[in-house]
Amino acid sequence: MIEIGPNLFVLVLLVLAVAVVFSGVKTVPQGYQYTVERFRRYTKTLMPGLNLIVPFIDRIGNRVNVMEQVIDVPSQEVITKDNATVTVDGVVFFQVFDAARASYEVARLDTAILALTMTNIRTVMGSMDLDQLLSHRDEINVRLLTVVDAAASPWGIKMTRIEIKDIVPPADLVNAMGRQMKAEREKRAVILEAEGQRQSEILKAEGQKQGQILQAEGRREAAFRDAEARERLAQADAKATEMLSVAVASGDPAALNYYIAEKYVKAFETMGAAPNQKVVLMPYEGTALLSSLAGIGEIAKGAFGAEGVSAPRPSGRRPTGPATLPPRED
Image 1 (cartoon, one colour):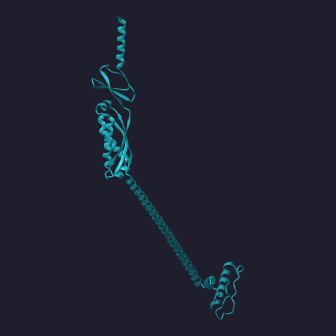
Image 2 (cartoon, one colour; image 1 turned 90 degrees about the vertical axis):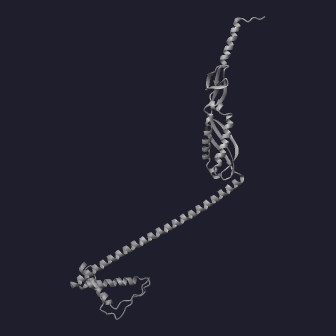
Image 3 (spheres, rainbow, N blue to C red; image 1 turned 135 degrees about the vertical axis):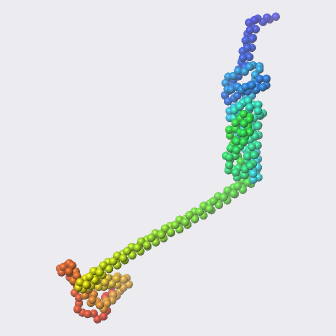
């Protein structure tokens, strides 16, 4: 019969003690939290790192992942407010912030979150028209996040994001939308062309208006200057007449002859400059013109001296009728 010595008994006790101590040491990895139960009742939560529990009394309840997680929402049909049936799917992001509540407030947390999200997708999207559904996706995401996060808050989780991936209308509705979009684009093209034509006509009318205004201003300016020129000419004539009157009153008939001769010369100059004038008729008083020219010569002598001026000699022959000058060569 084998006898067990005292040394061996102590060794066994030491091994058992070490085993008991090691059974109470629990290492929690980063990103996880462990719940501890004592007699099947929750007592505390172990954080990441080295932890100790009471062996044989305490036990690990649930190993809870506290990192952000994602759940894929499968496709489902949703009836919109205007009775259009669309197929919708999406994704949900959430994070556990209370491991105890996530473990003991709800069973099958992922399934609960998925059911809650799908239900609210039908509620939120069913209250909108199809056009709003297709053009307000961000608004749908925000409304879903607000509603689902409020409902899931007692479970110790935080809904971080809900995204609608696809909204697929029926095939016939897609064809109708395509035709509508084409018609809308054609309508916009026609409107833009009409608007461009309208702007072009307006610009042309504005240009014509500005041109007419400038022409009228030019005519007004020209008329004003013509009137001013005529006024100054009249003033000059009045001044000349006054000087002539003074000269005549002082007994100098040469000034009067000069005045009459100047008028004659200007009249003949005008007649000779006419483009269709071939024959120039001399008036009966042609000798008076020559006498006037003699008066001009006398005045010039008085002004410049006898050496610088040679006055024309009037012929003593009196004309018997209108004289003709040779035709002017064009």
